[in-house]
Length: 258
Image (cartoon, rainbow, N blue to C red; front, side):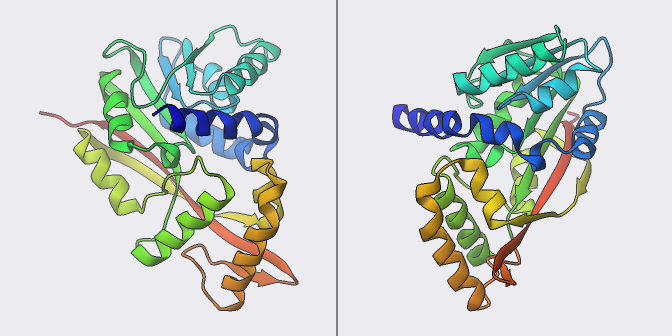
């Protein structure tokens, strides 16, 4: 566990500034969708799991009464705290914590949000169970993550590329497995929305702030694209540029009725 925590903290300390500035993470339309899905009011208390630099936490804080931003990496929490302070958002509290062992009491939140982080958890089932534990009976869990292909070979190849880019990556799930894991955690899906993010190799690599990985990964992805192997992400070359698609899914889930 110590080695895993070290890997995650090293990667996200490295990415603190580039991730905070990434256009794909600051898209106001997507942030509005997340806030709408969380359905917060001034009486609501929300938890942002694996909050990163606080982009989602700051968005949630505007309609919410209180937001707790939780992350494993202190450098990310420092960015989150500064972002919220600069925006005059005094209702955000930042705490260090692991998604698989959240440092909160049972049934303390009206909404639990997790954006672009489930694929970094070694035990997503444990993380989802923790989200359910801290959720009030009538609350909602909001998950937003990129889905991998349902085809096992394509999914494995996609995830291998993601890991070569960022060794804190574990696994993007296919939609069917995400639904299965939500059900096993005692959640039922209330709504979903999906879309396509058009990605370009240079933009994607810039976020991880690891130039030493660029050349080898460019070689691999170029070879795959030239061989017509899409890796479940429509990997391709256009005018010498490596392009591909990510397929995010925004899911709202509630505790199953007994």
